[in-house]
Image 1: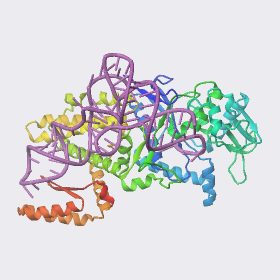
Image 2 (image 1 turned 90 degrees about the vertical axis):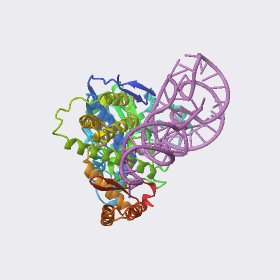
Image 3 (image 1 turned 180 degrees about the horizontal axis):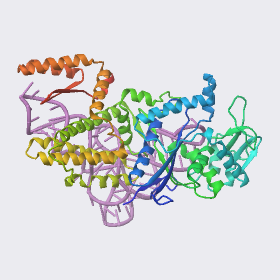
Length: 492
RNA sequence: GGCGGCGUAGCCAAGUGGUAAGGCAGAGGUCUGCAAAACCUCCACCCACCGGUUCAAAUCCGGUCGCCGCCUCCA
């Protein structure tokens, strides 16, 4: 059994074989830090986080590089508007990016290079391209000559002549061919610039990724990722620049994640429906967002909606509630069964099935279905504890917990303390409904008294009253628990 | 116009040649004072439509309809 990855370049799933056995060099395009990141960035980042984690999980030694494009028109413009330096602005949003991504449970990449600190490599690469005759200087700019690179269009499946037809190409007399793109741009007044063989200027958009990836990894990397929109022209140009300079394949596998739509519409500035991660984090637990994202295959589009997130929130509550009960049960029985031993057959092949699933192009939706099975089994063990099978239940529960925890090194969903998670979940739910904890606590207390007096009519009345507000009661041996329904009307 | 993708139950979502995972909702049951939670059972003779290839297709091929993305900054 081996990992198969869908590669955009060949348009098929191919067996994943790193160039250097046992080692993987992966690169993902990061963000331009000029604003708060949105949930589309989260989707992309989570996809590569899962890939990163899974590759490591299978025992490979992975080096993951993700860049920040901190030299860019948008940054310069925003910085000028605010009267701060471009670097300060980038620093601010890189910090915010880390805050968002850390919250979503992402592992930090092994390195996060910035354009501003990669200028020498970018200039060197550009010089190399000029020397090889595939790029040319023109009035302080340097352009890549698209016609000099035979494979141009192979990733985006485009033909140069076709593109020329209806292309909205601005007239630029410095270019020899309209599709030529800038590797280096001559400095304009008031913009950050660096000295170069062609005079002061700054890098074009695409060159940075080639320079960074090759600087960190060498001429050929194993896996390169990014959003679907980057296929053309960004990644196409990366291939042209890199292969044009080295004559070697740039990346073995090109991986692209699908987009996030908001209520079935594309997120865009013009529609004004950009959904920042901070906003989503305010409404939902970050790990709920993570679960939501991995419940759809990374390659497909996903629709962000309240009902979708509510469903993920409810599912997550089920997971954590099960974990809470199971851990309490297992801890309580700790002295009686010392040896963890092997679990029952039902969980023995769990990890193998997980790997089989993830080996199929990182099929996280199926992996999520798989952990659903594990939780069902876990709850079966908890339900069976009253019977005379206490030992078996403890062993069983312990085996499932262990299996889940191993697999969670990849999924990253269950790192929180269940009590803490559920408390916060309850709090957020109450908040959304505008309910006070004090009131809920008091009514629950009133009902406890009524129940002690076997005043069922009053007890039921209180329960209905709370339910009308969205509060579900759960009577147990040790008292009454409550939770807030994760339904659509919660915010209406 | 060119290129690419998608259309699976009320909803979300896997499955890319061997006879439809999983979740939500719904129905019944166990448990419960009654509930809730948890667990069990049921819930797509069928995968947009039409035709073809095949012993066998949701899966391959051709066509039709519908939706979307890229071709310009964009995860």
